Amino acid sequence: MDLFQECEQGLEELSLSLPYSAVQRAIEYLHLLEKWNNTYNLTAIRKPEEMLSKHLLDSFSVVSFLNGSTVLDVGTGGGLPGIPIAIARPDIHVTLLDSVSKKTHFLTQAVYDLQLDNVTVVNTRLENFEPEERFDTIVSRAFSTINVMLNSAGHLLAQNGQMLAMKGVHPSEELQDLARGFKVNAVHTLVVPGIDGERHVVCMEREEQ
Image (cartoon, rainbow, N blue to C red; front, side, top):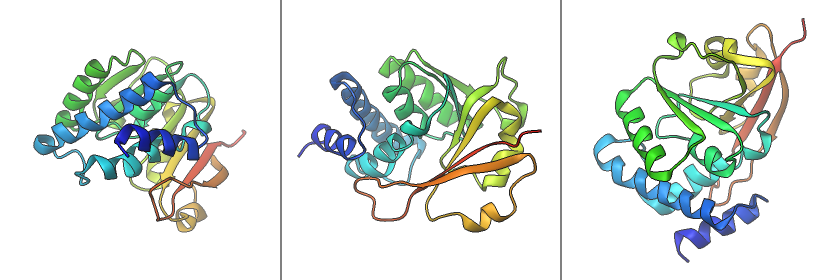
């Protein structure tokens, strides 16, 4: 089975239906990640077959939890989960934020090659980021602890917006002392095709004043 077929099968298991062109674009993204990884060290995973499940399908697994029309991917690295989200949801605008210039250089080229008109790449530190408008959803896949995420990015969240923290095992310890002003709505267990380990997404929002 080739990557395209594996991706389609994985999407079916995630109950996510994407057009042929989107799946094709997703596979092209994996090939770009593999190509640039040799020079830029974007991910420790080297084989596209592993990237498919551990990066692509893992990122697709949170698409159903998105709210609103704008998404900020904090500490996006090689574009995860932001680029797969942008591919799956061309109707929303995704901002990819990372402070490492070589990573945003790759992202800029990838966005151009993939013709993703709904993506903006920002190369700056989170504390220096001053967008014109706040975001409906802020997502993080590998950005430190939940409290660090809330304290450093919470001010960028729109009214009635939500924070999504992608985690491996259930982050029970991290949730015991949540940053002031935020509450947990739900912690969902994710079943990602090809990944044996635990995966969770923590959905948070501001507490009502």
